Image (tube, rainbow, N blue to C red):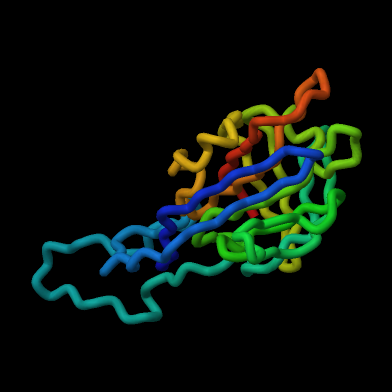
Length: 217
C-alpha cells in the first residue's frame, strides 16, 4: 500500500481571538519504488513462509490473504474524547488564497483535506483542526485537558475507529514549522491541533497538539 509523503510543510496556528490557521506549503515526494512491509500498524503480513523443498510451488492468489479494510475510508461525522468533548464535523477544508486553513465555524471540527482520510487500515496521518475561544464556545476549548493513554473515538460514515493518545505537546507558533514529526505521514496516526488557552486569559501564543494511534475498528 503506497501513500503520499509530505515534506516542506509549514504549519502555524494563530491564536488571536481563538482563530486556528494551518499554513500548508508542501510538495509531494516521489513514492518508494517498492514496499516490503504493510504501511498500516494493524495489518499483518500475509506472505507465506519460505520452504527448503525444491518442489514447493508459488501460492495461487486464493492461497494468499488480501488486506481488507475494516472500516472503509470516509469522512468523519463525530469526534468523542470521553470526559473531555463530543464534537460534530463540518467537513474537510483546503487552504485559502493565503495558504491558510481556516475552520469556518467555531463549534465544529474540520479535517485537512489534503492529508489522510479516516479509515482502518489508514494510509496517512489524519489531521483535525478546531477553534479555541477565550470567551468560551470553541470546539477545542477543553482539548488541552487530554492526557496520554486516553481514548479517542472517531465515528465516520463507514464505521467507528478508536485511537489511544500517545502524546500531547505545546509548540510556539514561531517554531512549530520546524517540527517535522508533526507533519510526518504515519498510517494510523491522528493529530488534533488547537490553540492553548492561557489560564489568565492572555493572548495565546502556543499550539496544543495531540497525537494518537489507531488501536481498533
